[in-house]
Amino acid sequence: MNILRRTGRSESLGQGRWIRNSVVIAEVALSFVLLVGSGLMVRSFVAIYQASPGFNAENLVTFQLTNQGQVATTPVARLGLMRDVRSRLEALPGVTAVAATSFMPLANGQEPLTRYGREEALADPTKYQQANFALIQPGYFAAMETPLIDGRAFTDADNVQNATNIVVDRVLAAKMFPGQRAVGQRILVRTISNEPDPFEIIGVVEHQRAISPAVDGREALYLPDAFLGSGNTAQWAVRSTGETAEIAASVRRAVADVDGRLGVFTVESMDQLVDQASAGTRFVLWLLSLFAGVAMVLAAVGLYSVLSTAVRQRTAEIGVRMAFGAFTRSIFMLIVSSGLTLSAVGVALGTLGALVFTNAISGQLVGISATDPLTYAAIAAGFLVVACVACVVPALRASRLNPLEALRQE
Image (cartoon, rainbow, N blue to C red; front, side, top):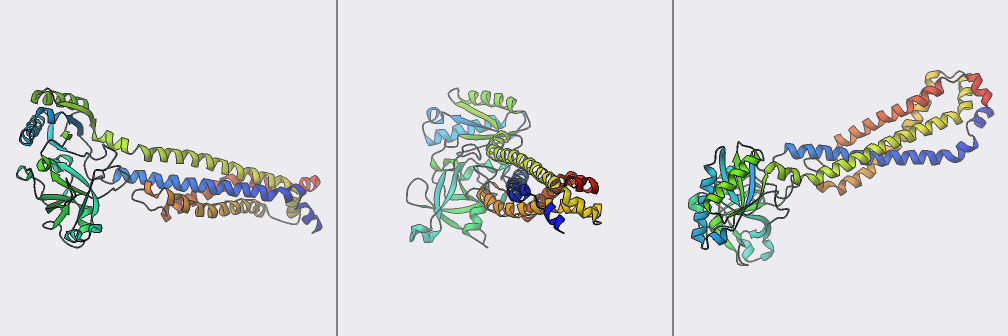
């Protein structure tokens, strides 16, 4: 027993083992945190493309129309101009729908806000809430393929100055009228002054993500283009079966045919806008994956190095154990269990760190919780498998030692 005690605790092992073990545990914990964050971001990024942003981005081209006010100086003239532009665009080969809005989802990077509320807000202004606000032409929801959930959308008869009809999205309807039908209800909206105007809800549409595919964003309400005098819907959407470049050239010609003073700028496909709006999430995903991969490699190398050193320093101890009848399998399991213990401690600490880290990036996550148990369990299981692989070589080396040679080294 004295030999076993003496050989089992060499001076270098006694002084340095806790440092090496602490470093390995820290590496495991760090890599686990990064892997969990990367796993959540991967699942979130998949969810972004699987979840509907509230419109169909395929075969949709957007552009900005300018100089409407110079071409048509009165509300009536601008209304006629918008109808002419729309008619010319609808007549283009392959075009199936055309509409315009004052705010195109994912195109501007900011939300146009207005305040709204129910009648009790007249007595208590704190009851007002904020929502996204957009002027739209009739046919906008059809062109964007935004589902109509209840009621109806705007028609040309609704597109007049001082209109009193309004369309809201699903989020606003559920927020303002929980458990009730929103169509037919009245709300107050501050449009051009601090004095609210009353509107009747005629339709409820699906919620559109306005700023990023990764963020639900605020609720939204819609008024017809002519409400503020027409011509404010400068962001156009053209749905067609052709290529973006072909549609862009056709759009420019069609607009020029209406009036050469009109300008067409920023012609992009909606797929491009979605891709650009997802760039931040993709960058975070790439960065997390890179760091997570490096951290896992370092953790595996560190674990391998520590176990290899332990095997060398415990050679005599292992020889004594084998001389006293220890089986090869038990020596193998002794080394593997040492490595897995370090990994398990690192994973446990990494879990605590991951809970803090993922809470900080929860705003980037879509369709998944920052504490998703499936992700945590999958990463933990995967990491322990990697740890087992890192333990195998040192464990095999230890189990194949010749007891006589091992004791001779002592």
